[in-house]
Image (cartoon, rainbow, N blue to C red):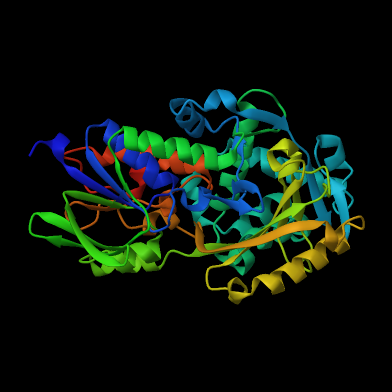
Length: 452
């Protein structure tokens, strides 16, 4: 069998798995993409809100997201992107403030002038750091206190960290906040010195449909509603056992790439070493509980409103209609209310009714003009494993992508070492890891080999 005839299986049909399958097929491989859900897309998938089809979780594209924009160009979609200047709000100390420009930031009452100057200096300094590895050796709270001061940390940074990480902020490294700042600054360096966010008309539903069609055109076999039970080595090949249409199926491949999150990968991959299992299980994940609301009218002019008050049950407000043309939503307003929390947090088990009551009550407190009757639809998404947390010395603790089982690879979002979890970083991870996967005589792949 020639190298080009190798049979590859990609387990997981999110944007990472789809991109890997697409590029492998372009390289002449026989590829089967196996996804447990009824549709492709993973965290980028869409769903129905009444008669509206839009993203299950909120996404935005920056001008600097060159890998994603290149993929959109390959799918003949990049020319349709729309770029919008947005505004940002902050809810702090019981008040809503606009911090959409430098003047508004300087007027931000919760911080003194010296606090603001130190905060601005911290952001500027972080944007110029290139050696992210040394930031893994210090906690995010220790680093921010050093550069922004204790008062700025307590008033500004700590509430934002708790909003994104919960109590896990205590074990996060400074590389986490650096990656967030670096992405936003890259957007400003890419051209205009203003915050331009982009979206694709039709949302990710349109992108995923086009992508799925291209995969089939490239000869990729796509299996959905196929739940992988185990992967094990059998003589010269890898056996993939999965359940589809109520029946157990078994297929054999030469190479298998698992893109599932670390706990799932550890569960389905057989024959790994004890060290590999330990490394997979020690990765700390954040989950998300995200409510999507369709409203009769807008509630604010801000695309993002950051919440710093702990008595609000969600950690931010994303008003998509401040970015997306309301015509996409039949003239109505789409709002996301995310709540980031540890993967084992009991709030992930709350019923939709309890969440609805808590979230709507909070919106009525925040916005006097808002009424519960304005809500036309309310839907909740729960994902236990969303983002791997950058803990101290994170990059040195990950398992290699090429496992000790010949032909079996694990490549997932935990391998995004010097970025934040977003679609651009996911596409970049796929395309960079692909270069190593295709090296016939490569050494075992260490995570640092695919950092950027």
